[in-house]
Amino acid sequence: MPLTVGTAGHIDHGKTWLVRALTGKDTDRLPEEQRRGISIDLGYAPLELPDGRRLSLVDVPGHERFVRNMVAGATGIDLFLLVIDAGEGTRPQTHEHLAILRLLGIDRGVVAVTKSDAVDPETLELAVAEAQELVPGTEVVAVSAKTGEGLGKLRAALAAAADGAERTHADGPARLYADRVFSLRGIGTVVTGTLWSGTIGEGDELRVEPAGLDVRVRSAQVHDRTVERAEAGQRVAVALPGIERDQLARGDALVEPGAYPVTYRLDVALEQLTELPAAVTVHLGTAAVPARVARRGRYAQLRLEQPIVAARGDRVVLRAATTVGGGVVLDPLPPRRVDPERLESLERGELGAIVYEPVLESSLSHLGELGGVAHAGDWVFSREWLEGFREDVHTRLRAADPRDPGVDLPAAPWAAALVPLLGVERRGSRLYLPGARPKADGGEELLAELAAAGPNPVKVSDAGLARVLEQEGRLVRVGDGMAVSAAAYERARAALVDECTAAGKITLARFRDLLGIGRRSAQLLLERFDADGLTRRVGDERVLRRAATRNT
Ligand SMILES: Nc1nc2c(ncn2[C@@H]2O[C@H](COP(=O)(O)OP(=O)(O)O)[C@@H](O)[C@H]2O)c(=O)[nH]1
Ligand SMILES: [Mg+2]
Image (cartoon, rainbow, N blue to C red):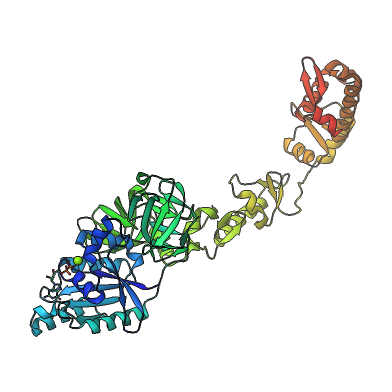
């Protein structure tokens, strides 16, 4: 695929004439063809180089259209051809176009000082020197579209510039910003634009964002020819059957479903041309959206009036009356608060540095590969945070009540996933040091007392001790701060189950008589059976729950 050269320069400085002199194609006539539906290409003209290679020249008529097209399609442009009228020298639009090229990172190209036939040698020399100063490191060639003077040298200069140029189009998922939408009889809605990344071909299922409209590609065309798959960097026309022309507009993006964030906020590293106004128009892809600028030093958050599709690393151009600056997107889905430290890390590419406490990995996938972070399940977090958390848990465990030396599992959604990394033992909703057992001081005395009391619950003065002994399975607590021994509880339970199995039910009085205990004691035990899910009250009687029957 040929590299694309975009023309730039002040109006009437001779861009179109130069393109025609180089290629034989009059790009000014293309819009007309386009209106008549003949071509989908905007001012495209193929240029043969002396060595047989081909470049593709894009010449967009008119300053506003140029700017719009530049800020929109510039990722499809690999090289610039900046045209300066030898008689007029640099003009405001020369500077603005150059600034936009720089903001978009298009730094390779050639400067043509044209209309050399119309000025004296001294003026020409001055114009060339001025151009050289304006764009240091770039070859400047004096030419005339009228006489053909210098055209050979210009071709050679373009060839040299193309030598070092590399396509930087990403391999990522498909993304194309619509620059035109129209309908063709018998085909339906057609969207054109530069394919920023990925490929598009017949049958692909894509989505129009921000609308979230699912579409299916009927066909893809490049330079008016149907292709199997259109590739990144190419200008593509995509036919989308089944959707109406007004469901899509310039600025919308055609993307692989779910692959790109749709956002109202962009955190960017700023490049400023003039004092930044508080309100700007943000240009990203073909979208142009009004926004407020929340600035923090070299960074800013652009708060957009309408959502757009964006990705980390995208370049934006900021315009008010003219171009005021630009930026590189550091985070296309940032938190509302602008955090310069976080943005510094992002700018250095230290994606891991923005992760501290556990966050869902999926919530950061738009930022790219996260390096240097720890994982557990769906969560990512920093090792430093994990160390601190582990230390905190262990400190609290060492300080815990010896009768129940555990701490609660944190209520956070990531807690369960992290337990295996903490060097602790999980028992239900509590965490313990490995092997840690509750200390039951005075337990033997209490147990002896309970054993003597049989099925009669005994008041327990030390509630903590009772809880520990219950966890150890040595007693069972009932209401009123009372307890029975585990053995007595089991005997009472067995008696109840036998009776219910035989009689289908049991009353308080019957249970009391079976065990030979007081009414209050019987009631406490029955309530505990209810709480354990063994029995259910039906009026004055109790029956076994079905689940309980199955288990016995
Ligand atoms: N003498 C002379 N005039 C030129 C040359 N190139 C362009 N022009 C004149 O400049 C006008 C504007 O050129 P054009 O290519 O349309 O400018 P654009 O707006 O930059 O595309 C033309 O109509 C010509 O009159 C040249 O090489 N020599
Ligand atoms: Mg022109």
